[in-house]
Image (cartoon, rainbow, N blue to C red; front, side, top):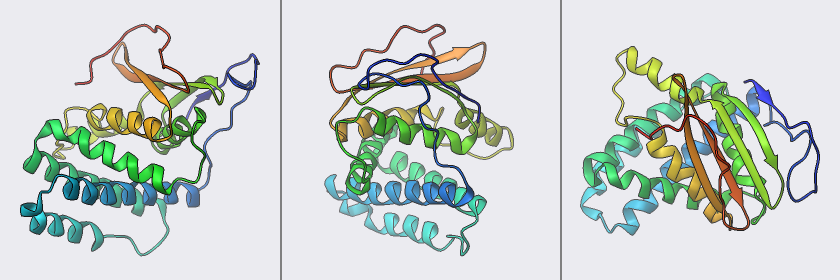
Length: 235
């Protein structure tokens, strides 16, 4: 991952000169893949229960079986990365097939509720949800920059979204993808993470001559992203 840091300092509540990068090492990365898979699977169960959609129980159990029977036995990162993508694809197809594409955001928000329930980081700290997003972007090798990194307000720019690139490479290999873009899931999921941490969130999708990215703002008060060039649609 290419990472850029602000060069100026200001109050502790706004930004700092050198924000910490995400934890490195295969063990940390494997742990995050596991965590993401757990949150998505638990979030899906929660979503189905709250939707009172008991008629889909059998299909949901088949999805869970397919996820759990293929979990890797080792701690090797690539195995857990593959397990996450298999599970995510199965769950996306289940949600879209039984509830419709528009309800994908509802599942994403349910997952963020699970994230907030199991995440030990404090609420009302603007850095927390964006540090999680930062770590997720790092799993793919995205190009990121902290524009602000404070407890009151944090702004993370993903200049080049390697998640988008990873999915497009898979699409070109013939892998069937349910979603037109990863933003359809990522945007409500990230917004939900901030909301469940007691924060406001705003985002802007960017397209710099075909290089997809985004800018996320988390804030204790109303979140208003700074203007950036080359906005992009979510599709």
